[in-house]
Length: 512
Image 1 (cartoon, rainbow, N blue to C red):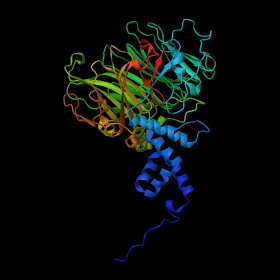
Image 2 (image 1 turned 180 degrees about the horizontal axis):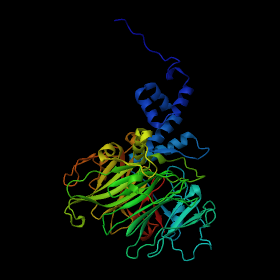
Image 3 (image 1 turned 180 degrees about the vertical axis):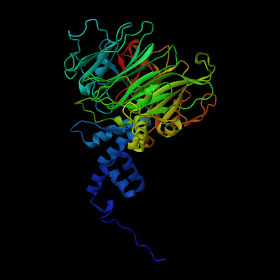
Image 4 (image 1 turned 30 degrees about the vertical axis):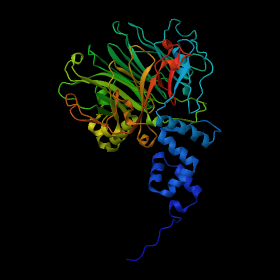
């Protein structure tokens, strides 16, 4: 057999061109592709290792971050801070920041920039003047509020039993005046609230969309364009005194919303430029994602859901910030083995974390398979239904939570914070932070069993009494555990500290 000649780089391959051009080509790739290059080629791995710009782009992807708007900060400094953030995960030392809020002020709490530990966002040094102008009802009492600093927007609501829900669109820079871009800065709901149950609400802002869910005896969903004042879509349902009934709507992006309704997840498209009408949710959903099939007379109850896109701060000095493309939809629920949930003998609780990218990938699949000749007339579209087995095991992460007194859940971007309830301490106790996205498998992390007996992160749960099939999920994750001791914060009154939540790159609690 003739001896083979060694293969040398030529001008026709990547390694045969100037190194400066190799760097430019690699910088044009996403982090996943750069990681692949380092695994299949020693020369490219060495190039990445000795080039700070390539290291920074790769490590941004591994951290679930994107580059920030800070100017004049060298790559070396950004990389140093990013690695410090990653090291905190590897050492299970997620920092907790205490931010002082002057008095109990919901709006100020929304406008506050959380002090960051690694990424360079600074806390606001003084209280923003935010007072309601005379055009607002002087007796208006805020029920809830949400802010979007990038759009200079604060949305405030008032829910009063027996009266119509109200919402105002206000300007931050103008100290609480009506927002100049809002054609109708005062919006009213469709119907009066009942008088027997205290209402609960959820507000999301995403671009021109404001998504508002108000729940009491019934759940009412309104999706509107806050600039034009036009309602894009409305829906609702009566709960008929069913304590297990649940319905919430969340914004996924400026043109998509998701409705979590009991065991179903409905994704639908909305057009911010076109007013809509009350629609049939079952025929107008683009896709319906089913939760795991139950066995026998088992029932799901105690459902809660949340989506929180990463906050953005215009003009800030952020070195890096969370990648909005990795945002999670988190759903907590309990399953019991009896037909009457309040009297069940056995009950287990779970948190299902779903990257919005998982939902969008299935939506794209539906679009790609659609035949133009089969398109239905507007308003007659038939939703595509995906059983759990077709989307859940590969595209989600599910954990079991064993908390005797229940637990709370919050999210920010790709992270989900689980806090077991502690009746004796509203601030202290244990918290568990999960970070869920594909590249996290290659990022620094502590042991998978940091959840101990409280948060079970197994890849498979088998419970034949309640689930028809083994419950599997395989999306990569990392977990951190932190015990919060109020004694570590002597300058703050324990009774005035809020429960920890996720901030820009750490955990945060507010001291009123």
